[in-house]
Length: 299
Length: 184
Image (cartoon, rainbow over all chains, first blue to last red; front, top):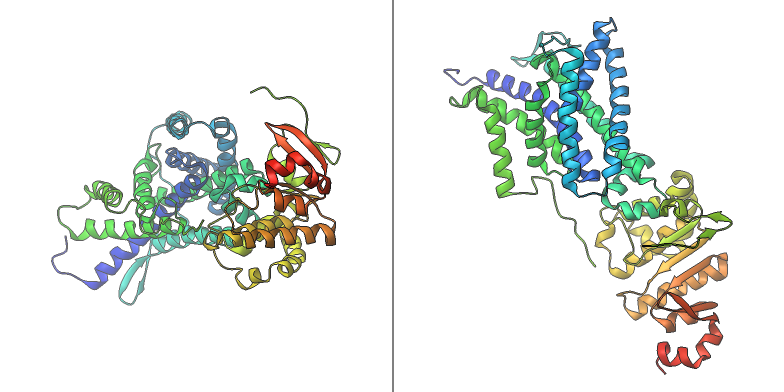
């Protein structure tokens, strides 16, 4: 607890909050992508991220340099996400939503067990591609790792945005999210668009996992807490809004970090309950979140 | 439910295949209720119409032709489709179907909930498409007057069976049709 308020300290807390927030934003966006098309929250999102992060660790353990391992992991994550949708979700896609939710919970438990079984329960160190040093900007020491994490996460978010905004496939995926029946009439193979959405969600999760692991260390349960933050972020931004997920993630990262640093009783231990309190407050006061909205429609 | 029989289009079997397959074989279907993407813009809806034939190339070629029929669409291409009036939405649904250059255009209840002048306008355009471009159109319509006037052939369906069918000019003279459907 700082005795006196210092701007440099405050700015430092904000920047490290933004780095953590970028990770929450990635995972929250993954949740939103799946929610928009499949209409459920994918509870296995965190374990999918953990599993793929372990795959990255395995590559590096075998001697592959960081970035090739990173790229290879994203490819595997994409294929894995597509596979999960095709094999596990597709057979039950027309069943009530609760059936799909239970499937994602089953996947959570299965992947968690599988991760522990393959790689063991002990905590592992995970390399960061960014040095553990800091640069001084205007009297504020900013961690290079924080800058790198922020840029990687937000860079991928921007790439995804460009994809959805400017490509035919992106347009078709948005169309499917809004109106799957009409999309079929346009000749769109809706099932494959859903699978692509799961693939992208898995890629976002893998990035979140690989960016989080150097700080929180690699173990089969590492993403459970991050997923709760991401869930709170998605609800804060509006569960059906991609922009909301990103803003919600960044906002949550900064707020939680500042509360932890400046509000005595929150400290380190009460960060998670604070996130849950945000979740509850949003659901009670404004269930559509900051950016979730009803569409204007004239009949 | 037991199903029998088959659906074939241009020599290709469509029975059991999804609507996406029908769309890819050249059928454009404007469903009852229009099936627009309310959250997307006018332009994006048209682009989705072009999807089935290769979006980028097709929209560039077909958009000018569609804008000739519906000039207002070009000026309002960035408007959200859900905020259009009912008649404009029906025209957008029709335009979106035309962008795909269909071999068969199917319209399900295009007059539903629209003002008579708008209905006239829509059927005028459909007739023009048929006359100028040789487009085959299949319309399911409750408004027998409008439908019989636009169509060359017509069928009266009763509980899923074709009760009467033939040349629409003859159908208009048919006494049963006149009394039951045209109201005079």
